[in-house]
Length: 502
Image (cartoon, rainbow, N blue to C red):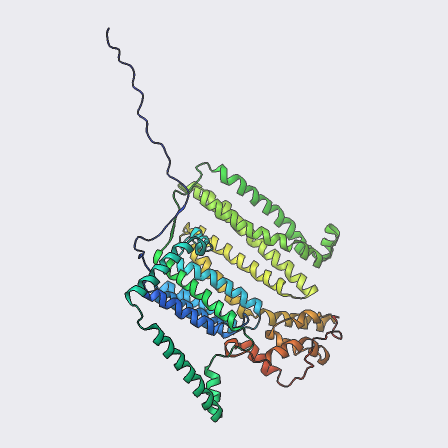
């Protein structure tokens, strides 16, 4: 039978596309065990934190603790810090120093949160938005690896350098502490100058719970060790293959639609701004102040959402040809410019509202946040003009730190108090309950009020600044207020029945 050649099937080729999913990698140079200097750095940071952390979020102890932790992480790191890292660490220390500068706890908390995020970015070495986002979950993702690494390091240090005669070491330590305590107490009782020296050197916790300080110190030590591990591991998020759309309409249609909505809104908004109160009452049936309040939060959300839309559109848009780059600049740049106009509108609305109803922490804070979003939009425009966005995430990070420090320099509690005092002089209206809850930063402005109102709003501040909370809670704002109130006498009680708002 003759042989018949059958057609051969084509060979099967693997058409598996490379994964677009990002994945986490760590450095191959990560040692198997933690070096001894990492353990020492963690112990030193824990001890410093237990001694320095104040009982509140305000005090020079916050800044000193932060400096101790940053120094410990750098000492326990495999490499010396680079110049940009030193600049970043200095910026973080400046944020923490606000706790020793301003007496408003809410402002100090804001700076602490920003400093923690910046510290995570610094330790991870994040350069992209994706890596910066990873810093938020890095302690959770890397915790198990760090725990084993630290445990092996501690076990290795113990096996290589066994402590002989542990009982004798403990006895000598306890005897030394006992003798030191007894003789210091005797010398302090014998001489007032030496007693003053001891009181200035020995940490004074005031009303602090020593147990909580120890727990806080242990937590700081753990996170310091984790920071050293991350510096050794050098985690990196690989982006895989960025997904861009070759079909221009897929990103241009939705973003162009948003741009058209912006144009319609801004035309209407321009008529309202120039038409004034009469136009608003005729068209919306609201007073100008109510009109301003009714739309601010929506405009705030629009600004934030626009930044997200522009960022995603920039990643998806194909910029391989000149015509496509021009279209990207036109639509996304137009969105940024329109959003800047909305920022101006939102700030105008809130300014009108505060002129009518007074300034508060919330209103001042959201105005500052709106200004920060406007600065980010400007950064996006500058980056888009040159189509260079590699350094944009770091620029936004530095911009955020600068904005936070500027807000602290603005001294919001003092400005809020001054705005309300000016409003009282014009209208006779004042919310004494609210002003009484401001921090000592507001003392100078509140002293301009009449004597009866002054006693109402400064009573709590006077009680706070005259209490002795220890040197770790030293604060420039509180110290300044104490001097300003040195000639004032208030009944230090919580009875505000005679201090009703007017």
